[in-house]
Amino acid sequence: MASIPTIFLKSIMEKTERKTKRAYMYVVECADGTLYTGYTTDVERRIKTHNAGKGAKYTKSRLPVKLIYQESFDSKEAAMSAESYFKQKTRQQKLDYINEHKA
Image (cartoon, rainbow, N blue to C red; front, side, top):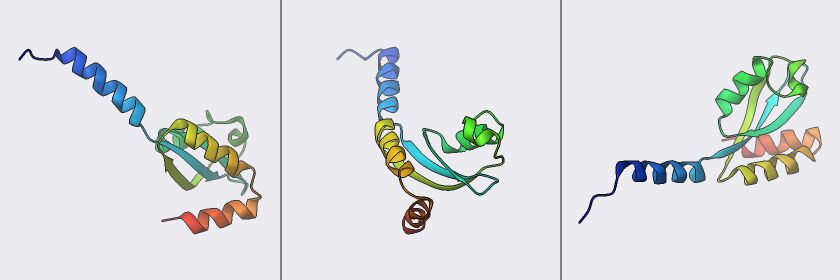
């Protein structure tokens, strides 16, 4: 039986990794007490980006931000849908959701 070239296996593993990479909807509380919701594949990196003043336009003038909630999804599309739905809620509905779903 012939061996499978390493480069071929590496290519397959990278594609599988990309397909299975988790995506997250996250909520931060800004310094002024407002909430900001977004999505990312790396929450820690995204929060650091926000706090460096290089994140969303909304958060740049409301630093620092503090992560108060994150939820994991199987795809970027699912996280984006959750973000869109969450942004339609009132502040109180958002806080209630976070309190109900925090681990």
